[in-house]
Structures are given as C-alpha cells and as structure tokens.
Image 1 (cartoon, protein in one colour):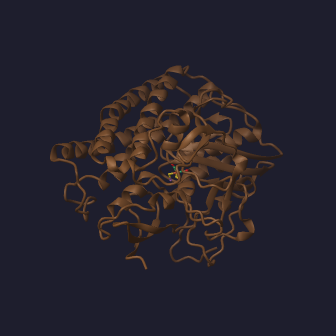
Image 2: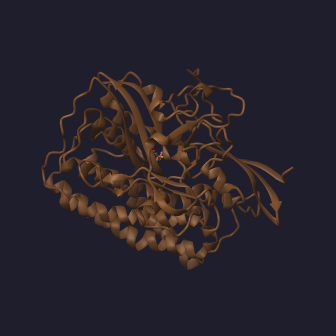
Image 3: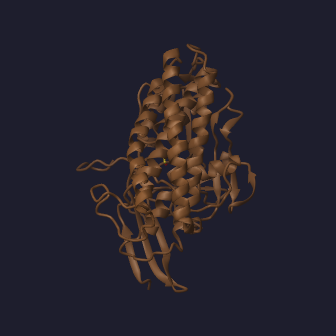
Length: 471
Ligand code: NFE
C-alpha cells in the first residue's frame, strides 16, 4: 500500500478543470510519486456542435473553445477551409494571420510564466491570490523577490498590450472574427501597421529585459528542476507561422524527436490516432485517425477516468509545446524537464516577437488580404498549426458547404492524455512519476511539474450546464 493517496482537485493556476490523483511512497529513501492519473473532468462538445453548420462558421465557432488560444483555433479552422477550396491567402493575408496569431502566443507565454507558474516558486505579498499559500522550498531572496513581484504586475499590463496589438488586425481579442477561408477580413492600413509596431516594440523590450532574465534567474535558483519532470522525452510539432503563401516553409517546422535524442524525424498526420480505452467515449471508435474520428460519449464506462481522449503517434505518447517546437527547430536542445519547458517558452516568445517585427515591416499598406473562397462539393481536409501550448489540429469533412464531421486534437489532449489500451501513461502522467514530494500536505513539486506543460483543460474538455439534463 502506498503511504499517501491524494487528489489535487481542482488544480489551480491553469485554464479549465483538471484533477490529478497521486500515490506517494518512499522509494530508495525518497518520498515520491509512485502512481498517477491525470483527469479531465469536463466534456467538450464542440465537435458535435459544429456538425451540420455552414463550413465558413468553423473559425469563429472554434475560436470560442478557449480564451487563451482562440486565435490558434481560428487559424486551424481557416487552414482547413483554405485546403477545402484549394486557395492560399495573399501575402498580406498570410502576414496578418501570423501577426494576430503571434500576439496570442506572446500574451499566453507572458501569462504562463508570471501569473501561472512563478507563484509556485516565489513568496507572494500575503494577500489573495497568493494566499492561502505554501511554506516550503522558497529560495528567492528579498531583492529578487521584489523584482519578480514588480515584473508580475508589469506582466498584467503587457498581456493587455498583446491583446491590443492583436486586435488592431483581429478586430477584437480574444475570439477574433477576422480569420476566414482564403485570408482575413482586415486590411493593413498604414496607421494600424505603425500602432502594431509601436506596441510590439514595447512587448519585445519586456520579453528581452524582464521575461528572459527572470526565467534564467529562476532556472539558476531551482536548477534541480532540470532533472525533474522529464517524462518520455518524445516531442512532436506540426509547425506554424507560414513564411510563404503556400505554407511550404514556416518559422517552426514540423517534426518529432524520440526520447529526447537523435535527429528530428518527419511527422505525418496519418500516423495520429486517438485511443479511448480509458476515456469516456465508445470503444466502437477506438484508435481512429481524426480524419475519420468520432465524438461518441459513453459514461459510465469501466476503466475510464477522463474526458480527454489519448492521442498517439504510431501508438506512442508525445509531448507537445514550446520545448517541442524549439527542439524541432534546432533553437533549444538542452534537455526535457520542468525548467527546460520554462526556458524554451521564454526563448520562443523572443523568437516569435522578433519574427513579428520583420513580418510587420514587410506589409504593404492596404494590400489585398483575401483570395476568393468557394465551397467545394465535397472535401475532407485538415488544418494543422501550433497553439501556445503545442500542436493543434482540426480535421473536417464538408459537403456542399456544410460540416459533416469535425474533430479537434488540442495540445492539452496530447499532454494530459490518460492511459491507452497498452496501459502507456499520458505524457504528464509519465513526467509526474518519480517526482519527489517532500511534504505531501504541500505538494508544490507536483504543481511545478503540472504547470510546466501549461495545461488548458478548457481546450481539452467542455460544456457543462448546471441543472440541465445531459444530451
Ligand atoms: Ni485553451 Fe489551447 C493552447 C489549444 S490547449 S489553450 O495553447 O488548442 O490545449
């Protein structure tokens, strides 16, 4: 029998609702996690909700999946629409998509470091949301502490700036209405380009002068976290930020890395399947590629413990996110751990912000941003991109302009997936195994590992209506 059996429910400072069940025991004299389940506690019904609707509605509806990566969903849906009609956006349309999408990444990464992850490491000011808190393993002296807290407050302002610049071309954020098949509805007016560039310079300065040094300071204080939370070391990226109108080259390429070593392998979406053995979905649709996948709920179901399906690549679990992207791109290959995820995310923010500067400079004022899109009679397509938390895919079948089928695999589904029929742990489950837990009443080490993958269960699960019958 393990010494301690506990549930962290809900896990806080994430988006959405996640429960983590842990068993803690002493192994080799070290108290550590010996068993774990990550549990998505809500059902997400967007796939069913899309069926039968006009295909052109997909970007605006799917962007409602989440408030921190709505642009990524709009982008994935728009890419699937582009493929349906066989069109690509013109140059200004591609760039405006990248700029709004990039603003979403910067906002999300700043949010993650300062507001979601940093409170696992530093002492707060003795008031909510910092209280009630925990009292162990605080290594930051008062000078550094004051700096972190000052930057925490600045981060709130900078997050808003990210939304403001994204809204210049996105119309509004979150949940931009600008992404459509064939391009965007916005045009790059000269005054908006200038305002975008001014806001971006401010954000870039914050990333370079605050975020990167703060991430490095944290990494040096907590360098044991380079050895905690590794997981499988399997990393997967679909790629994002098109550099040419056909999307043949991207700022982040697609690929995968096996066990944190060796050369980058190619990634083919046909090798992706979703296992539902331990999820509340019908086994009649087990191990399907999302192009032919189904969202068929089944509860109760013996052995199931999560509303997240378990995506697998050639049957293997993969971690997705900034570390995977930066590794595949050759920009960060230090290791796979809690602190590597935090550092890779910071350097990715810098890389994206710099790229956005050059894209904004390429814009020709008032250039066309739309290629004519016409609904095909029949089409089965996919939109593969990246969201701040990792690889994001939309798969859809359309007939005469209506959605016949829609499947979405979010980054959090990859990272927080449950076990599969081979009893392989999900990536976060694997990363949590063996995590030392000094005081099970204050399992801060567990939170640090969970937060390092920046879970968003809003993206992964959905739709709860209190006091209404399930349908
Ligand atoms: Ni709700 Fe999302 C991102 C997507 S995570 S935040 O990034 O897609 O699964």
